[in-house]
Length: 171
Image 1 (cartoon, helix red, strand yellow):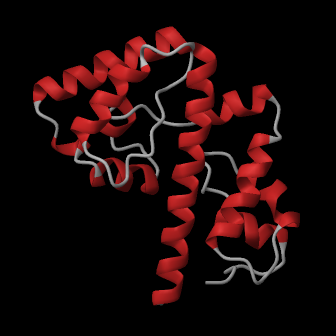
Image 2 (tube, helix red, strand yellow; image 1 turned 90 degrees about the vertical axis):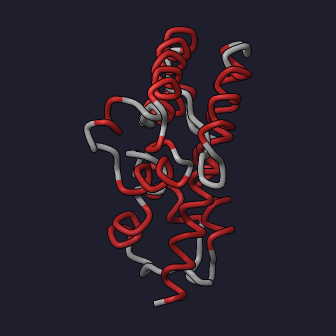
């Protein structure tokens, strides 16, 4: 798998700018760190390094760019395509009324405690595992959750890049 965009910054950002939720700055900054022979793993590492080296404020904005799981945006159909697919793959769209209520309660408690949304790479997971993770992570302190959110965002980006490269190879 090789990079699927020209060495033109605008084309690169157009292709990879949505990998980090509503944060094209990651692709913009990562552009100079990758080559045409790079694959998904190299892009993921370059993008993660950009985030890891960003200011705490930029990281917080990145975390806050993520939607709540089973949140209002999902109910209204306002999630980006990747987020919609990821939440659907975890069965979130098939929540029982009780599970949906629990998601709403956990989202509210989590945001109130930490000041940002609960972020979890939900692809290859299910709603029961996600609800259990919510319960566990609500016990963490803010610094631990901040770090966990960034780690989860890197997983989401890696999975998105791998999917993009698979689709490109299949075409």
